Length: 408
Image: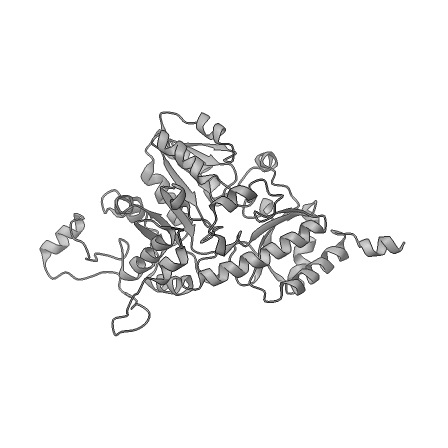
């Protein structure tokens, strides 16, 4: 039977304290106990259903975590105050000093900086590899390797990870496969294909309104309990706690994610086809020209398409900046980092979201100065949007006016 993540979200039913159709918000930092013994048991991790302190957990955060776990098909989940607030405790919970990580070479710049610059302080070292080449991944495994880390669809180059193949390697060598699924919620369900931990930046598509930051780590009950442990849990001790009011807000937005992802994907597919037919170097997993198009199709939950992210290469950073400024001036979207907003967002990742990656490494992975990353919005008339983008491209010479050249 096919996995249907939106059904799992829809089937969750929460009542508010007074019968409200939304659950009540637990606007408290600390919680009372009817007996001192219950407080002691809670500190020891032996009391289910009791709340201790909101850095540990709260009803609002648990509601959201339960919904995200249902979406990803894991036992439970732990929400956090940012995407990095989910990524960093997962890695530090799984690794000790002297351990080793294998990571995709193309990942979010903040994650790259954490693995490249921060974890070595704890003698945790990372090899970055072309995650699409499974033989290279397996060749890097040592007796100290603990994690294979990747993104379902990588930021910003949109490389697609073979999650099933990576999971088989991880299981063979007793490793944990950690997958960041921020770019492809609903479209891909990594846990179905064998991922041990699934991470999201809730800031992006899941929340969808660019008004808050948040993160989640989805996994087994045992692993999430370890992360929340008051004595040695990385989530508990590092303190990246989501506010209850924000958790309630994200949960409401999550209910419409399936509709939004369908429109993001539909619009992105339309633009990708148009850009490619115009002769632009276009990368989008929905195009047959994408090297992992077939792999994505094999993994995808078909109703939600190939996602809302695409890239084009306009040849130089100057051209990229000129085009983005003009598109913003024409109200096509915003020259801004992040993704998943109702309006289109565009940026040049080499000088923004991936700027933590050294220039020589950007070049090695194919991250060029002229690359523009688009997070395609929910435009009702995407053909009008395309026509306006094309007029901008023609006016600055990114595209040539073929009609005019035929006349000449």
